[in-house]
Image (cartoon, rainbow, N blue to C red; front, side, top):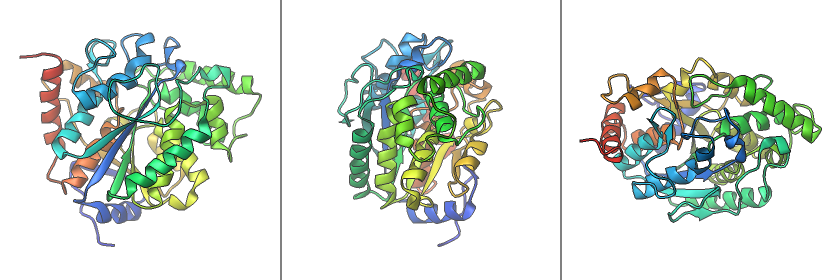
Length: 370
């Protein structure tokens, strides 16, 4: 292993030796980006998610983000996925990273409320039910196994694989799954709003576990069962892709605290891949005062580094983007993982400043600014 010189566009938390080893093997090489889109009725519970202008529109967020990435526009909803107040989807940063890097990318359909109008891998999942039913998902093992085979295929012709998600309500489902697994004993997950509805999420998770008749930690060795009861359709698909790909090439797990549930499950199902994957996220998530990616990851494993991109919108001319610096959004649609991947595959030629500049161009286009 050669010592790796980290560019200023990237930051690191966790095991530096593992991070250096992975980066030295993939720096300047071709990767592939995947985004698994899905929906859960949990997001339609008022107050759970701001990843849409109304609770009902959150059910369209995954499909709309996928359409934006592939087609450059959305057709399943009018306009672009926004938070209340007009703050744009993080898919704008994801698209910027993919445009600048030229990285190949694929959409995986984990189970959407509405079918996105794009070519995609469909693994057999359906839109998830509310976690309070304690019967949130169907076909969990089938989706996981199909994801595993997809991960193996993606690894065949790429130096590394990036996985990510767009699923509104996913931090609540992640909290439920990680509580059932015993990974979390307190609410450390993030929110797309600066006013993280922690009490609501914790109450829903408590109700869900009571409905299932289990205690926290009862599913420590059975993450797929935890997902069947309390997960969202993104989870089994991405756990499968992660486990299948990381047996062959390094994997970057793009996303925030909801992807922690995916990593928690992978560590239980295939502990041998630990050391060959790391998280890729944003500075906004790492600095969030109302959640703690660091504490969550410390609970999962001390051998999964976190690489984060130092994009800064504080001097952006657009208030919708400046809002990221005020605690809105933080992560989503693999924007952190795609940005980290763009920097890696370009051997550092693409910088955080370049990414921001491209976001401005995309944002002007989709908002029809002059």
